Amino acid sequence: MKKNWLIPVLVLMGSLLAAVPVSADNARIKDIASLQSGRDNQLIGYGLVVGLQGSGDSLRSSPFTDQSMRAMLQNLGISTQGSQANAKNVAAVMVTANLPPFASPGSRIDVNVSSLGDATSLRGGTLVMTSLSGADGQIYAVAQGALIVSGFSAQGQAATLTEGVTTAGRVPNGAIIERELPSRFKDSVNLVLQLRNPDFSTAVRIADTVNAFASRRYGGPVAEPRDSQEVIVQKPKSADLTRLMAEIENLVVETDTPAKVVVNERTGTIVIGADVKVSRVAVSYGTLTVQVTETPQIVQPEPFSRGETAVQEQTDIMAMKDGGQVAILNGPDLRTLVAGLNSIGVKPDGIIAILQGIKSAGALQAELVLQ
Image (cartoon, rainbow, N blue to C red; front, top):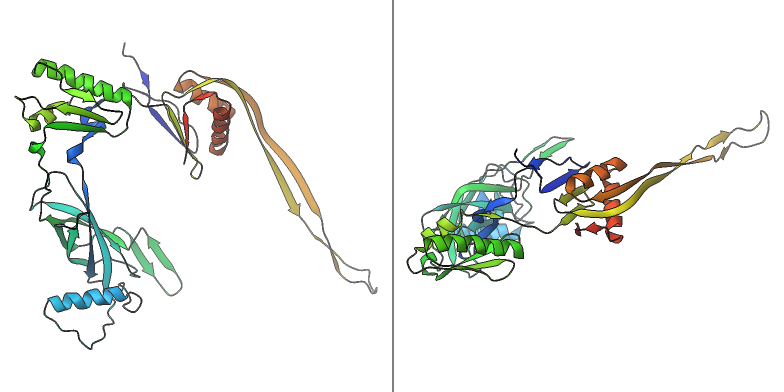
């Protein structure tokens, strides 16, 4: 008979969810760690979007747009001396992109375009040739192309409808890589694996799994955990570094994570890890609601009298107390903990208060993270 395990993480939004059985927490090394030399690099550039239907920057409010447009026209051999532009179909934008690892010249990447001035929409615009630089100031890519904007805006005389963001867009495959990164993967003497979720137990298991494979394949261990985040893999003399990484990244490792409870009080979201446990504790939760109602009464004077109409104040105060149930929580596993919290029948804000109280009492055997 197949053994069932509890789901590693439960997301509670509005109310607690029931636990669902899943398989054990095994994952490939490529899913839990990344190669240190294979990281992305961020690129940024400043450019112009043209072809807008009157939704661009107002050149008086955004003088940098006017300056950029004049500089672009002068580079194209068009003189703009002594003329005043009042076009509303141009917008200044910031262009950002991520340069993937081992990218070669001639390949294409996506770029994100965001308005920098007071343009109301970039829909229908075209990004003019924009150079993208890295942190070292070198130009690594050049972007150009038509924008794709998911949001839209419609405006009439007395009403306006806007859905999504109209001042940001994307140019798929809009940038061509012109320069490759100076580092070479084959020049490395070892592989440095960085865990996405640092954990000493997982780092040791990765090293043990890689060493077991290397002992069978190359005749000796090659991996050593440096700390909770990095595992160093030495390159065997007879191994090809690319083939070695391809073999290592598909090895399966049993992962481990610390017990955590993540609470977001703004959205009422609660995330409880599978290893969270609660010592035996009694919990009582009740809410007190006080309702104050003002019903002023109008008092009229007697007929033919010299009295005046007056207002007599009348206040009704009513107190209501809900809940108050007492539940005993003893959560040796996730299913028991969820069942105990559900038995109290409170809303997410009440559950958040209960978890904070259990933590203060020292009965919550996990880290409580408040966002």
